[in-house]
Length: 165
Image 1 (tube, rainbow, N blue to C red):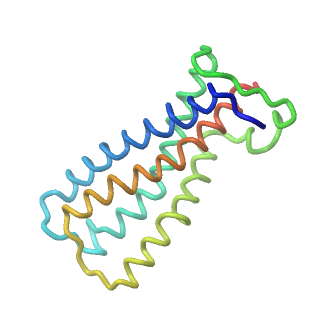
Image 2 (cartoon, rainbow, N blue to C red):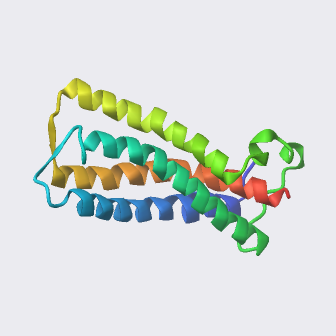
């Protein structure tokens, strides 16, 4: 399967880069609202760095899947996004699952590949507290990277899913 220039632009630029910038700003703001009043954030507790990492690692890919698949579906149906018709895979099981189920799968990947390594590093480093300013910047950058990786995958899945109906 070779992507056309229009597909590449739509999936990687329109969905990936834009989502990355958006998530940097949004999640930085959320982190500031939650942790901005604290000088130091505990590694564990409520609120804490550890809990925030776990929740974000699942919720961000899940929400990306739900939101991006709805946007892509609308844009494919209204011819604002290029269709990607691949008859040989039109009935494969990964295209038949709902965006909610695919979102749970993507959230699981987020937990495994993003939360687990960070929690491991946090525990190995023995950090008891993290500066709120550093965590806010980290959170924006970390979620931007996650969005840059997850959003194109979801956009490609949704483009193929809704083009082959």
